[in-house]
Length: 229
Image 1 (cartoon, one colour):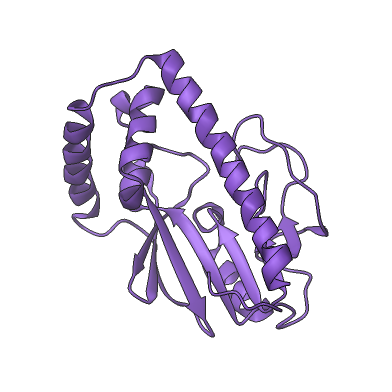
Image 2 (cartoon, helix red, strand yellow):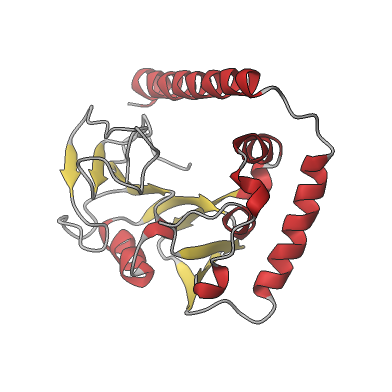
């Protein structure tokens, strides 16, 4: 992220693991919600504002940078949400699951397929055509293997400055789901060749991954506090 030393940073949808560099947190839900990970709780360790991302209670250009990680695919009106991000800040960072991951692992709170095509976003609204769930992905170990070894194909990021260029489609284009299905079959073929760990061992690795992620976030926060602030 291209965040300046003295930038005031807003994080939208900070949830249970906010970025260390964020100065102000903003979330729509104070309590538990299906939009966050199961059994997670909202972290409030710095100034927090409870607000809807489509109607921020902030003045225009109140922030220098805005982070919205895994929020875009949840919103009801992405055009309004993106307009609000641009209103309150001049630059920012977005992260979201790829269309391949959305097709591979159905997540009901997600309303949109999101793509980053160079410097432009494309959002495709999910219709009833997208409600097919791959039965094999109900097995947690398969999903874990996909996320661990094919993360670059599953997670996308988009950093913007001054203006967000985007296109919104109200339904899946012709051939879009068929193309995703072919890619999904290829991904399943790759995963099928891998050696599946014992569920207990896999659970231990997942817990270790979460611990390492929290440590990495803590070290990131220490870096910003000691060298950038």
